[in-house]
Length: 181
Image (cartoon, rainbow, N blue to C red; front, top):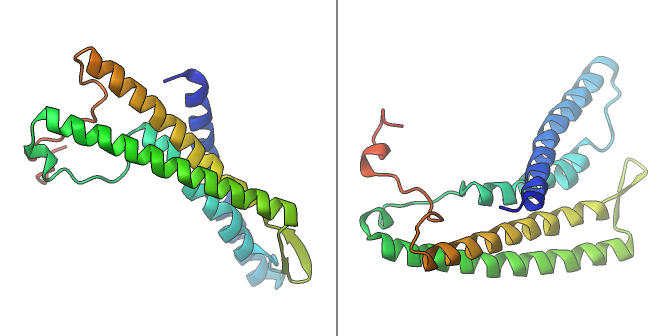
């Protein structure tokens, strides 16, 4: 994988993980201030839902795709020949590119719309901008798109060379039994 793409993917995944920590700290501090001094933060729920949770969910998409870590069920494909599994894998990559491209484009359009109108929310009398959070989605989907395009390129090159290196690892039926890892 190109180093720059891997750098961005790892960076967004790290940012996603940092958002988990910041979310925990923010909520904890809000609860402590509420209980000890009756002075809670006014926009904890807004920041949690509009920023932290969005970043946690979408900034890690590319890393999950890079690591082939999306949820998958191989009940049927584990019984099929590698050639058929390869065809399914290639089809799934193409489908992923189409969906990721559509989501990247649509979420980018929405982010631009929210930016242009200066989208915000009023929370306890304070104006809090929400438009920046809309740009998180096209970043996540766009990086996932680039990762998947890279995987298609590798899949085609390896297939032409008679290799199956880009196929995800297939578990054997024995690895699915309890006690096996």
